Image 1 (spheres, rainbow, N blue to C red):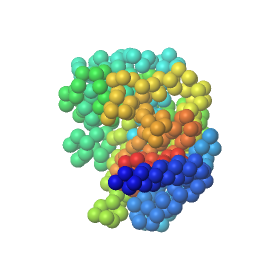
Image 2 (image 1 turned 45 degrees about the vertical axis):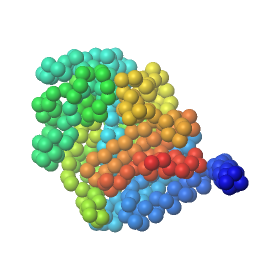
Image 3 (image 1 turned 120 degrees about the vertical axis):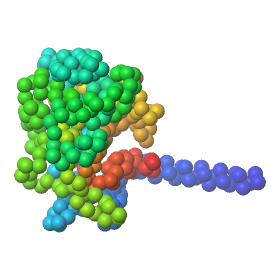
Image 4 (image 1 turned 180 degrees about the vertical axis):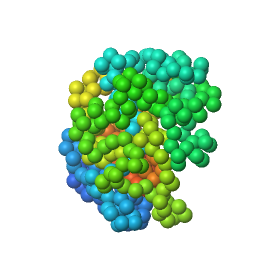
Length: 368
């Protein structure tokens, strides 16, 4: 038994040494080639459809589209295909709020009632900070019966959506813990409009998209003729079908932006450079771990970003999903790696794709 144990121990040590040696010899080129093979295989199986970009040390190291942007016309996805990014919009909304604070037009600690009138009494003392960090206790209007059954198709104003959310009580005392809710970011969009005097879409265009050269990004509407727009699809009983319609006035400031992997890469790079878009102090606020936001044991929500560790490395990320579309952006700040995955096939998981890429680059097996 002892000889067998020693033999097994030796075999285990050899395996670990081999794995360690293999990890040491991992190069970005090999990892990205492996990624391309993996994604091509998924696309061939109908299990992945979208565009991917990897940036390393401030340069695009890999970008490619997979599957179809439009199934009916056999138009392929590419790095310039425009996708709905869903809740990745929250990063932009948070940045708008921080820009307004830098300009002295609001304060993060202000109650939202300072800017918006006729809110329910229990909402009056909720602060902008609590809206940004999902610690407001507000019920989530998305998925409520009237929204899901009617307004997703007809559209609604933010005030109409707020009135629907207000029919439900607060989930908890504001500021005590985290519970993700689109309602908070809907209110933040209204605050942006009130403080700036511009529509949410116009503020984005003037203060973020144009300064950063994000010419392929914007606030999505069904009426706009948009070149290279991806259509949204769903897997139903193993077959790809057209996704259900949703009027993009419903996600609004919580999820109504469209973009490309290239534009989102430029966006993510700007957030890594103090002064490029936001001042150093604002970026520190965005990426701070607030104790009341700890969720799922090891994840914290800053301002429009989740802060955690994966593969033993610090990770900033956010994902999103809206009918027919899924999105994920990850940044490993200490390694200066950015991964963007945009999909137009629901319910596939872009975060799994991003994790696969990160694992490949680090020479580690993907984590479940």
